[in-house]
Image 1 (cartoon, rainbow, N blue to C red):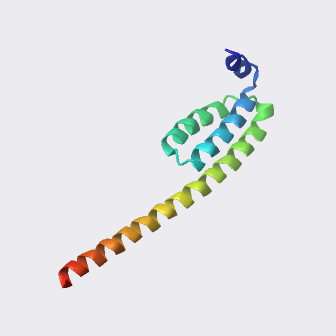
Image 2 (cartoon, rainbow, N blue to C red):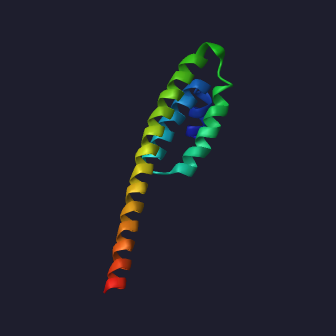
Length: 100
């Protein structure tokens, strides 16, 4: 109940800022689907922020999205490296069996 009261007291801009931090945590944890859901909500909220606060909110969202993209690229590279190692291992095993 208290958390609902806190959420109501936060401005939309503050809620977006909070969502940015949470999305970065989700990215760090590899929770990509949940992150995507939050990003859709955050982006919709950005358009509803008062014009006087919008530029700062957009700047913060861009910074956060940049951080998330960096984490996504690192995760993508890690997966690509693991896949390449698996393929090398499979090739070696196939070669061993063939030349046994």
